[in-house]
Length: 309
Ligand code: NAD
Image 1 (tube, rainbow, N blue to C red):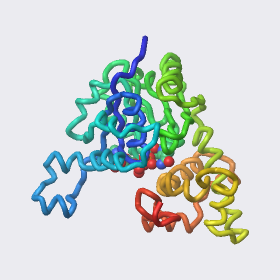
Image 2 (image 1 turned 30 degrees about the horizontal axis):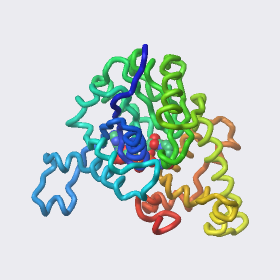
Image 3 (image 1 turned 135 degrees about the vertical axis):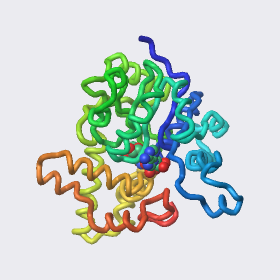
Image 4 (image 1 turned 120 degrees about the vertical axis):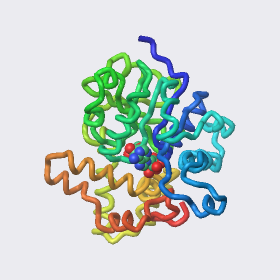
């Protein structure tokens, strides 16, 4: 089977979904970018007399996230004119559009139950031989596809992009025991040659490679910071500009990732490793759990460790 990606769909238009869509558009691939239908109207929508049945409301989440891409800083890796190649869609009215695409990337919240639900929803609309992948940070790819057809599972794998997808070169490709080897080889070649990524094949183990190590490093850093009484600013400085990195590898990065997403990632590995000492390392510190509760989840909320990020 010769695979080719002429058109793609991204399911979930948040930090990563929109970023992946922008990267695909930037290499000339048209993308349908899906999100959920809002359950309530904004004040502005109410003032305009719109209802929950209006298309502008139903597509609002994906469209707002598409518009945010236009506000990003200019970059040689991102031509804003290409954003026209992205079409905002919703997961109730537009599923038929999935029949047109060669690759569907699932990029919804980091929860196994939600991801399973989304895969079940899209399966009837997937065209034969279309590839489906997940951008999960570390949930079992195999477990996610349980209940799907064998044909679906042969075409299903993990494609883990890093944030922001247009700058960060790493792409982890995670096959399951069921993924067709031709699909894996195609994704590896496509990732390298078309998307310009450095592809690493990873096993379907909790948090794969980069997040298993990265999340561990972050937890240990936070623990030592608290023991030593260092400040967030001090840690960021010595894991960032002071050692020649343009951005901090610690708290500024966490703000970019989103503390809610990070909490799910840490929880996932904690739930899936058997060594109690390792489980303890991945326990989210109370102060970070409180930040998540308060909604101080980083750049997407306008408040994380830093206010204006
Ligand atoms: P996000 O919170 O920015 O976006 C998640 C999107 O999912 C939102 O647009 C939300 O409306 C949508 N969503 C919520 N519930 C849904 C449902 N029931 N059905 C469909 N869509 C729903 O999250 P994100 O940071 O973009 O993360 C998305 C995925 O990418 C996660 O699996 C995450 O682990 C992974 N990831 C995140 C990063 C990162 O740095 N943030 C990096 C790599 C991978």
